[in-house]
Length: 283
Image 1 (cartoon, rainbow, N blue to C red):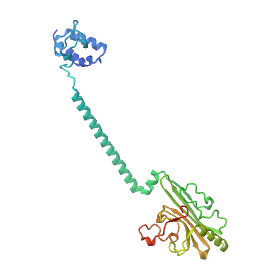
Image 2: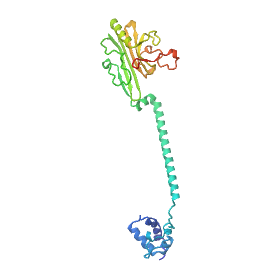
Image 3: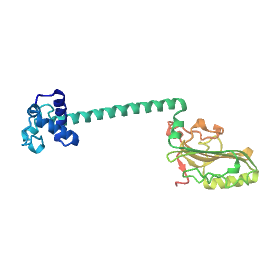
Image 4: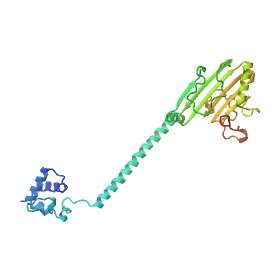
């Protein structure tokens, strides 16, 4: 039988898959019939067939199995080299994609910081909740507060006050950070003023030398900017200002700065000008 370029080409293509038993029954029949009838393919594929000429695997010599002339099988070293290259390529691809993603994320954060400010972004990330009240109808309803104070410096109720001049409560709380600003301004009768002043001085530290506040005052907590809780006495008006602050910057204070501790927020001032931290809840 003379070589048929088309049939021989198909046979050469099918042969490696045939050896792995990957070809269909129809392909097997074609290949076995063709090789049986084609000396050229038997020679070029180095097949030493059995009596029937069928190119079965059992009839293949070990040398012939590893020596298919047209489609040689790649050796192990080559395969390992290709696998190693693919792994390096995948690692490089992953690193590149990760770098691009992180770069985009960083750019987005910087852009958001420019537009909204770092404090706003922090509140979004930590899922910070804000509670705010200006009406005394919700006085002492401070459920969202998380901290060490029980606000004992504040009156239990407002029935003893002649007039409530101002009230403000705001708490931004999360599992990581808490901001608190609580302010109460009450006017008393001369008698109830003295009674309330005695109550406060019994539970608080008095600023006897008036070195920490511009007005006579007492405090149950004084940690500079991080936490302050105190009462300021305005003697002539029979007024008492109750204040509790935690992590509040000076520019966020809602009341007159005159009533802040003199050194509030000035961490860099000399030690002799700083109040010694004091808190009745930790003593």
